Image 1 (cartoon, rainbow, N blue to C red):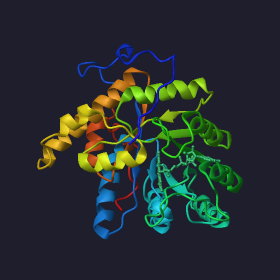
Image 2 (image 1 turned 45 degrees about the vertical axis):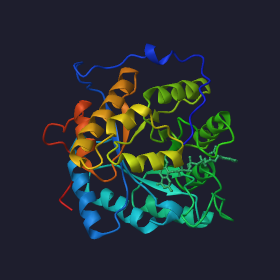
Image 3 (image 1 turned 180 degrees about the vertical axis):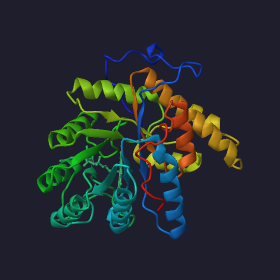
Image 4 (image 1 turned 180 degrees about the horizontal axis):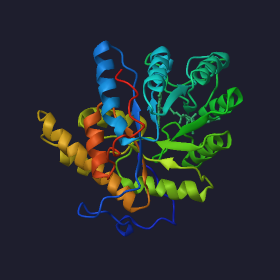
Length: 320
Ligand SMILES: Cc1cc2nc3c(=O)[nH]c(=O)nc-3n(C[C@H](O)[C@H](O)[C@H](O)COP(=O)(O)OP(=O)(O)OC[C@H]3O[C@@H](n4cnc5c(N)ncnc54)[C@H](O)[C@@H]3O)c2cc1C
């Protein structure tokens, strides 16, 4: 786990940031998007589709489907994204990574997406497969996400989102180099950044200040991870360089054997995080759903995001 060195002089101190009390009127201008992962088994497929069905009436701007480490889920990601396109009115976005493939293979995957009507790609470098210590560009492959963005734009005029790291990517040479990298990805054709998950709203807001000061003007959408398994998130956060504040450990303390209580705490923590961001002008949120709808649904509800009046016109076309 690493912590960010804060350099921005322009950002007001944390205490000066407005917050939103639970008693405040609900926002009416919040936009959401949801991330899912491709299912491995029939049971997981059922859970995914139940979740999609539950969350669809909230009319997300798009729903994205991840690409397993090392490109391990290529077929499953493709099948899931295409099924979302075919069977729902949702706008699907396919994650695609540079890892383990030559450029021509990745270009062909992209062409298949385009032919299947997929217009939005989340373009990433990707993490190395488990049997590899550290990332090394594949010979003949796209080395970094910025190269992939440029390559995808050569294939077709995709809408492209990329990753951003409020607490700096763990392998970045410096905070400045990481921001330069984000700019390269935007210059190559990306029109949105989605952040790695974080828990301290102020870290995101300071990152936003730095990015804007550096001339990044595209939306930088906060990635929100509702936490239910605290121990696992601590491990994952250490790998991603996300700081886990002490108050979170306090909140989850003693709840290891109380999953229901953990879920209630998780919804409260994430909703508070989002409302603090909203009070500071953020109204676009990307949720890492982990294919579980209820928690994300509850948080959206607390953000004033409700199913649209019937008929919504964007619900599932037909039961899958
Ligand atoms: C929203 C989101 C979704 C994700 N989805 C997936 C997924 O579906 N599948 C998956 O495997 N992973 C996923 N990841 C994880 C991501 O692949 C990793 O965090 C990865 O380590 C970095 O990806 P990137 O696209 O930011 O890489 P890049 O933008 O390429 O940056 C990676 C690192 O390389 C550095 N760098 C960039 N260019 C150069 C250069 N020319 N020379 C030297 N250093 C350079 C950067 O500063 C950074 O430290 C996701 C992450 C986020 C935030």
